Length: 222
Image (cartoon, rainbow, N blue to C red; front, side, top):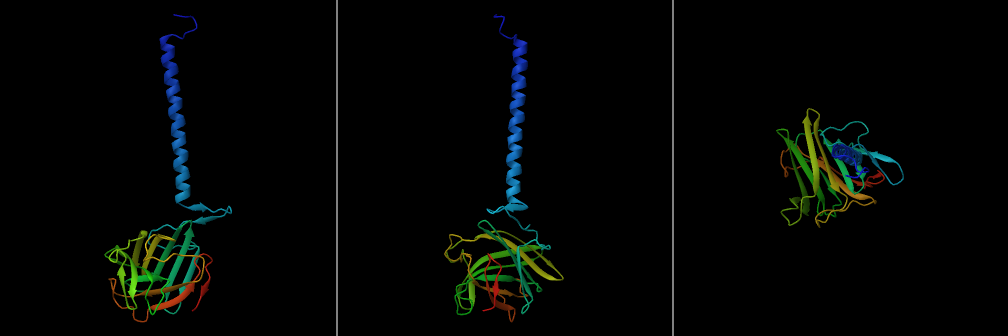
């Protein structure tokens, strides 16, 4: 054996030490990756200008300043909240009733025709939610029944003595021809709710129309 060659015991110690250092380095990289992913999925989301926006927590509750924008429709006493992060819009609907509540995006008319409808209700603490399309002036059908797709990425809801809350998220633009892209212009929007725990009960007078720029928060009465 050469005098420059470490003895076998020393070689084993060096190998064990090298393996330990490799495992520590690998674990550190994993921790950094997980931390990076969490910071970009929860809490503050960085914007190109260096600013940050809070991503709403979909938990069936709406806290102060949770959403970037808020519109209260005094005519029907319904709230709409929203935040845009990247290519996702987070929406929250709140009504004083105990049935379905909905938002219709960009109806062309007459009446509700052409609207991209996100509608849901809470029953027995479970949320029933649908991505619909107004295929006639007075009715709407699930996109999936029409040959489209359900593009609601996530949703939650809650019900209390004060009414019903639905929170959801969806891409600004989907590949479904029955969906309407959310773009930085004044979009026609309809808000409505009912006391019926289904998708078809009539809303009576609990319906209103408004123009909304979801990117700036500008609200215009049509």
